Amino acid sequence: MKKINGKHLIHYLSTFVFKSKIILLELFILLIIACLIAIAFSNSNNMKKNSENEFQKIRQPAVAGQFYPADKQELKAMIDEFLGAATSSNATGTAQVIIVPHAGYVYSGQVAAFGFKQLQESGFKRAIIIGRSHQQYFNGVIADANEAWQTPLGKVMVDKDLIRRLASSTSIIKIDSDPHKSEHSLEVEVPFLQETMGNDFKIVPLLFGGDEPSDVQELSETLAKIIDDKTVVIVSSDLSHYPEYETANELDRKTIETILSTDTLKLRQDNIEAENGALGQGVATLSCGEPAIATAMFLAKELGLEGKLLEYANSGDYFKETKNRVVGYAAIGFYRTYKSYTATLSAAEQGIALQIARKTLEAAFDDFDNEEYKLPADLPEIFQEKRGVFVTLKEQGELRGCIGNFSTNFNLAQNIQEMALSAAFDDPRFPPLEEQELKDIGIEISVLSPMQKITDPNIIEVGKHGVYVKKGTRSGVYLPQVATEMGWTREQFLDSLCEQKSGLGKSCWKDPSVDIYIFTAQVFNEN
Figure 1 (cartoon, helix red, strand yellow):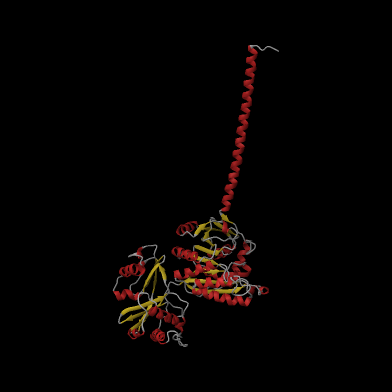
Figure 2 (figure 1 turned 90 degrees about the horizontal axis):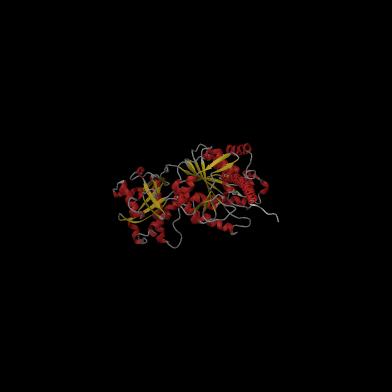
């Protein structure tokens, strides 16, 4: 064995240390390079993810090229042709809620155009679009989470601020983009909005996940508080699905009558019958967007809007070969008129109205269990109008009963009958009227204008305006003549309404969360 002296040992150790340092340096350099590569790769992935996230904030068209043309020029030309063939309504006022269909444009586009025609030069800056999901079931209502919606005609911004307000106002509204991703019922309405409202507007896409009536009422009451004169509500729904042509015409006519009457309970009951097969083979539904339509009906009542059918057709009208299995389409507008009825009852007509009420009560005692008083067949035309009515009964000058309504399925003559009987027998403040009292009863009738929602109580005129206040389940109403009879100022009138009639507490009319409606009345009595 070779002997190693001290000098050699030092040399070997020095050489080993030097080489080790080189190896460590190389390893360190390799580690730095690996870290730099990892960072670069991570940044690249983050950029890609950020790009994808930015992309996901814009909802891309799901049915372009299927329900409507994907080419911009072709789509614009088609919509313009539909709008050119449609006519503006002769209704007075602004259509603030519009029901339109959502099938492929070749089937329902022409009908839809009659609804969207009402938006040209309307000045609306926001469109709340409401439908029912065709692909997912979920509780409540889902608002879209995207920043904007893309169509072949361009991009439309989503009103994120309003959506957050809505979601914070009620627990039934959630925010999620997933249910909207492939749903067609709202998407097909957006190109029509772009062609009629221009580029300076925002949308609020809302989807029902089921048909729960309580969700409809909750959404309607929430929307009614925030809808202003710059907001239009677009309701997306087709009518009957898959009956043969003539049956569809008949069923849809009845559904349209129900919609215009704003009877949401009947709409629900009729649709349940259809879905259970009670209306015949082939009838799957009377309205696929029933909760959306019911919301329109609730809003019409809440906002005092007047409904009008703008156009009706079914798919068999455009494709004759499909008449054995069709889908119905309607465009319906609900209008804010900002005016009271101009038609009033003449002195002779007032006498007829009072006679109807008096004879109805007399007949109730003469033949209570059998037929009631039959209305004359030759009543003046004004008695065919659907008008709100209050009937007040006074016994020797003291109140004995008062019942009325603001909207009704009955015409004026029938409504006078119904309210006279209700005032006599159904006013919970008084026992039912007895026959011997009738000779001492004086009858007063108030024929009402539509209610109009207001935000400034200072416009209320004592003796001219009746007032209705509402918050949650509490409400109360005073007819215009109450303030005059009591000698009240406007503040006394409103304080009493809030405290005595509605139970909302004195001065509730100063609370912004309380809804205030005004109306006028033509009042006349037997004296």
